[in-house]
Length: 65
Image (cartoon, rainbow, N blue to C red):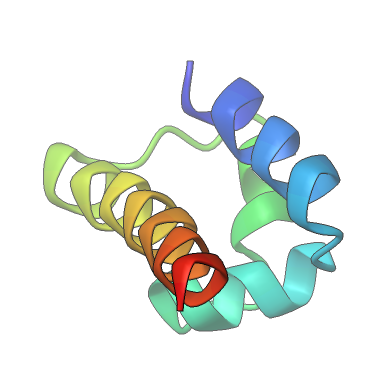
């Protein structure tokens, strides 16, 4: 489920839910809506998962430098 991945990401990176929503989808209510049962369409889910993957990749690249 997407919300489990998002919650794990938020804990791992200490990002506020509203900040995550703004960065991932320009929607500060995104995480709250997901917690309340919102199920995003495929394109939005791919965008969110892509953001999380890109964020982690950028952090790894930053550590290696």
